[in-house]
Length: 397
Ligand code: PLP
Image 1 (tube, protein in one colour):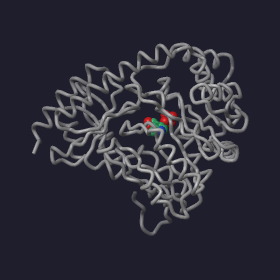
Image 2: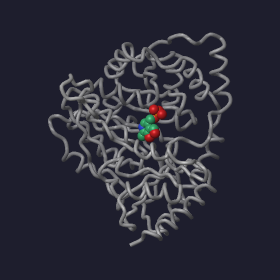
Image 3: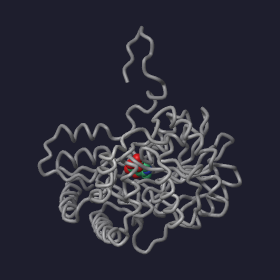
Image 4: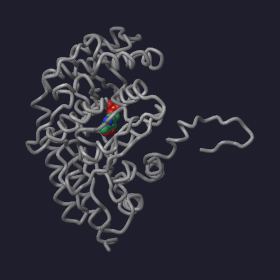
């Protein structure tokens, strides 16, 4: 970021430090190209839209005058419905008055969560690869990201001993996405239990980003971290409506956790965002009140078919990848071409008009990988695979 010499620095060090993280370069490239024939496997949003009763609830709320500021932690009706949903899915009981805050997506919950808990220099341990936005949020809260490498050879399982070895007196938070973006890795219960033991031993807060917890395949079992004995007291459970309910643009999510942390987040909310958007909260309430489990099971069948197609075909082509068990991403190794992640993704876009994301945006462990999002119809994925195979054959070493 340029700073004119001789003038006072205008941009803060915090923001300078996050400059250039991510894949903005590719989005710029994408926007400069014709979209004709392009297959985008990049943006992590479901390909199903928001259900009509949800849209109707928001429209009705707005037309009835629900357009003013709301309580800073969200309407009580929505917090109560969130508490019921968590109880039903994971058997954890939260007090909707003091232990839940409605936020502008999980994104705002992450931001508030870190600013509520980190002092300058505090460390946050996270498995690598990780969601792109974790390190910038940690940095903006003046914390330091400490990465624990995970590996495709054991399906990106977090090794609790390696995590424990990273703990220092400055370690404040352990953060993970489960299932994970970008790998689709699902954390097994025994791993979570070991993480719980370590968190307790070293008195560490855990941020469990469970935004993909309903996207689980092949009979695998999801365990919510806060449901483990003693963990509710030290866990900030993050979840939202963007993925499960096809509502990314509505910008709504929540955090559930200990009253002191939720209270600190609320205090910041009161002075920053003021409140989550009004009619969106009624949309979220309608989403939770829908009886749509059977419909969602059908959606998952489609996603599972796509997952299996990619897993089988990418490995056949030579882009090796473990089987993802959750979310809607797969993270193949592109090193068979001798190209770096960046080169691979750029050339694939320019030469074959298939847009994926470079793995290095997701951490050190992604240098030889790309992220594919399969929230795209099956036929589109088949076409993309034909192009990817042609491309790999051209560059294969
Ligand atoms: N956490 C993870 C792991 C994500 O992948 C995303 C979005 O892709 C988010 C959080 C942000 O979600 P929201 O739309 O609720 O802000």
